[in-house]
Amino acid sequence: MAITNKDIIDALETMTLSDLNSLVKEIEDHFGVVAAAAVAAPAAGGDAAAAPSEVSVFLTNAGAQKVGVIKVVKEITGAGLMDAKKIVDGTLPVAIKENIKPEEAEEIKEKLVAAGASVDIK
Image 1 (cartoon, rainbow, N blue to C red):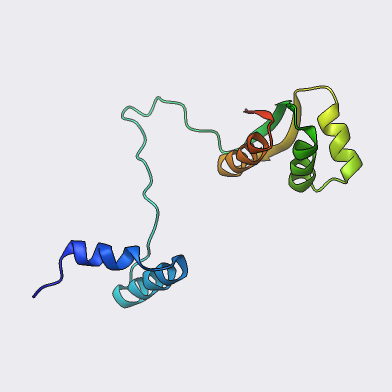
Image 2 (cartoon, rainbow, N blue to C red; image 1 turned 60 degrees about the vertical axis):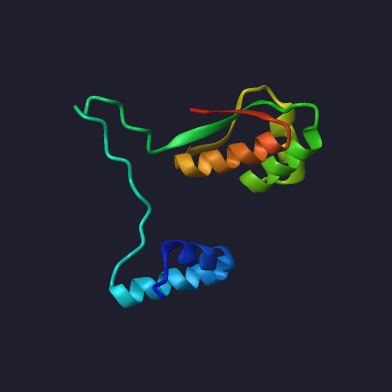
């Protein structure tokens, strides 16, 4: 009896993330390929504006749970606790991190929003 795609998927569902990572590496080595994320092709015509390569994250509102937001700002900026508190309590909007990759900005935004803050990425 031949192995079906469903059999393979069922087997993959039982594997841990570590096991899956090892499997991918073995497949890469065995077949001499590299697993790469798919990249979207640019829109036809090429006139569309490209996504920015660097953006900045701005705290626009600290929300009701300022303590949690202060902790996240401290973690993100590497500032001391008092400096992080000054950032959060200061005049808003304020740049939390500038000239970073959009992916990193989204991660920072998720952390701040989870803590109760409002954030803009520009």
